[in-house]
Length: 467
Image 1: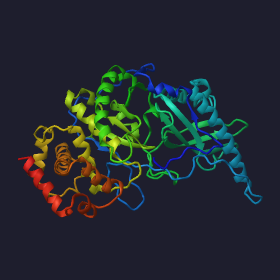
Image 2: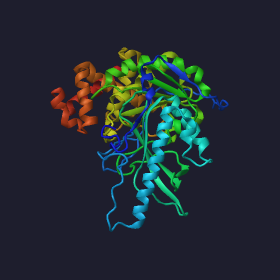
Image 3: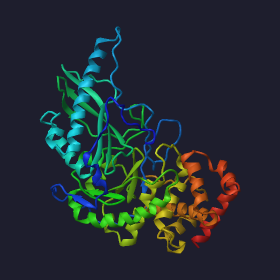
Image 4: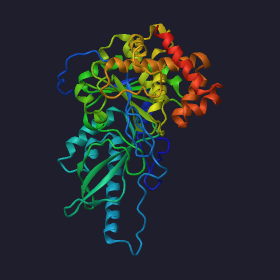
C-alpha cells in the first residue's frame, strides 16, 4: 500500500537483527508435519487464473477479479494525547488501557523478532497461547523481518468488568528488511491490568473497507490458520503446508524462472521486493484468503497491502505438465508485478489486466502455440459480440467460456504489443488501470488513433488468429 506509513517515533517498528539473512542462499524451514489431508478426486484445472477482489463502497465498480487495498496518510498507532479537563472519564480510561496494550504488543514484537516463542505467547491467557505458538512458528518460517501491532481506535467495554475489545492493526514484512509493510486488522479482547492479558484473537476477515483507512483486506492469511513449510530463494518465497514440503524446492526453481519474466512487466515503479507464492491443498484452497476463489480458477494474485500481491496456487496445479505450471506462474507473478496498490478500475478493464498476464504467461511464443486457442475459437465463432469490455467471467461461468475469454484478452493485448511495442502497450495499461482513464480518452494520445478504430483492429486480429 503505497500510502501506508510506519508508526511514529514514539513507537518505532521493530526490525529483526536477523534481517541480514535475506541475502543468504535458499533455505527451508519445516515445522512438524500434520497428517496428510485427504485429496479430492483429481480433475483437470484450466490454466486461467483470476485476481481476487473486494467490492469497494466508493462509487466506482470493481471487477470480481480484483482486490485493492490502501492506507491513508494517517500514522499507525498514534500515541495517546493528554486528556482535556472535560474529557469523558470512560474515554480517559480507554486511552490508558490502549497504552498498556501497546506496551504488551511491543514486548510481543520484540520476542517474535528475537525468536523467543515463550515471550511471544506470554502476553496471552493460557487458552490463547497454543494459537500464538502456531502463528509464531509460521511467521518465523516466513522469515518475518518487521512486526508491529497497535490499537486501531480506542478500546470499548467487552461487557464484563475489566475486559475490553479493540481492533489491532498489525504491520509486517517477510524476508526483506525495511520493506513497505503489509497491514491487517483483527478483533481482540483483553483483560486489563498492569500488564493486560490477551483473551481472544480473531482471524482477519474479508472486508471491503477497514477502519476508514485502507480499502479492503482478504480473509484469513495462510500463516494465521496453517502450519507452514517455507523455502526462500533470490526473488521468490514459496510456502505450503508440511504435507507438500518435498515439492517446494522444485516449485521454487520454477517460480524463480517465472519471476525473471514477471520483473519485465512492471508498469510503474519497481519490481516487488519478493514474490510470495502459497500452494494450497484442498482444505487450504477453501480457507486461505476467504476461500472464495472461483471453481474454474487455478490460481489468484491477492492484494495484501504494502504493494504486495500474494499468489495462491490451487490444489493439483503442481501436477500440471511442465509448460502449464510455468505459464501459470508467469501469469500470476506478472499480476503481482504489474498491478497498482491503490486503484479502483471497473469490470471493463478486465481484458487488459488479464491480457497482459496471459502475454507474460505465453512468454513470446507464437500465437499458434497458445494453449487456449481452441476454446477461444469456439467462443469467437459462437456468441461473442465483439466487445472487449464485457469479458469478465462469473464464478460459475463454464470452463470453456472462461478459457475463451482469457484467450480473447490475450489476443487483444498481443495485437497492441505487436503493432505498437510493449512500451506503448504498458503506457495504455497504466492510463486505464492506474489512472482510471477510459480507453476512449487515451488511445489518440498514446497510439495516435481513436479507440473505436483500434478496437475494430483488435477484433479483426482476434478473428484472424483463431481461423
